[in-house]
Amino acid sequence: MERFEYAVTLTPAEEGGFVVTCRDLPQLVTQGEDVADALAEASDAMDEVFAAYMQGKLDFPASSKARRGEHLVAPPAVTVAKAALCVAMKEAHITNVQLARQLGVDEKEVRRLLDPHYASKLPRIAQAVAMLGKRLVIGLEAA
Image (tube, rainbow, N blue to C red; front, top):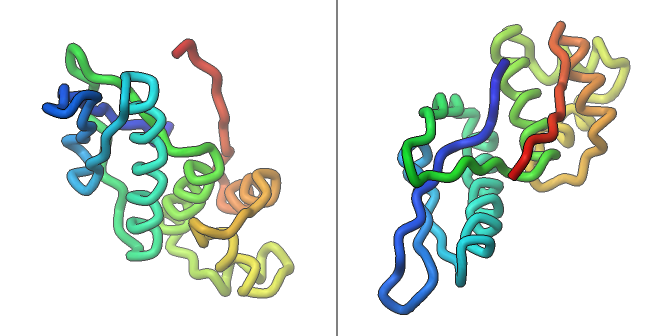
């Protein structure tokens, strides 16, 4: 199962708070006032990093196992779903037009499903993923 969560490091900042970095996503650099804020900011920054990967049609890097002192962070659920759709389409070697045809919709709707800044509905993304022989899974874990 593809998981879209990455280990981040919180480094105390000179001015207070924490600087957040991710060794698997070097573009991710942010900061927060305290640990909770830093992790929330990391999720928000990861959302933008994922958007850049999706818009650039880049492969998502594999996530490394968290080391001692690192925290696992994921972007918002809708972003993860859109990333999963991107990966499933690449694996199936299918274009937007082909997926639109299978879904019985205009290609514009598939573009919206893949647009990281468009507010797509999770059931619609799950339906598209299912058309590609995959299942979108949302889990719950202790923080």
